Structure formats: structure tokens, C-alpha cells
Length: 82
Picture (tube, rainbow, N blue to C red):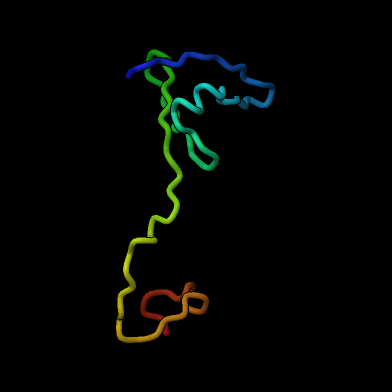
């Protein structure tokens, strides 16, 4: 079933907008998602929903590299430094 949602919102004095509830619900917009804006040469504005990804690495298996690591200690090391 295809349906279109049309709504409007007002740009406030700080140039912020509120995405109307009907639009958020129809598009599945959730907190943490991003809206990517594009303006065509003729001034037409389009918006793309970029979903926030959680647990992107949760399905990866650890790899044994033959030595112990400590991310808290190693995170600032530059390749080649000891």
C-alpha cells in the first residue's frame, strides 16, 4: 500500500525546524538519525534519511593476532611506534 504524507513546518528565528510527527512516523525517523539535505540547481530541496546504526560491529568475531592488546593503552600509538 503506497501513501504520501505531506505536511509543513516553520523555520524559527534560529533556523531550526521540527519534523512533523506524521512525517517522522511515516519515514521511521528516530532519535540519532540524520537528515541529509540536497538543493538542486533550481532550488528544489530534497531530504534523505540516514539511519543511525547501533551495534555495527556486534556480529564480528575477534581475531587472534598472536599477541595481547590493550585498547586503553594502545589507542594513541602510531604505526611503527613501540
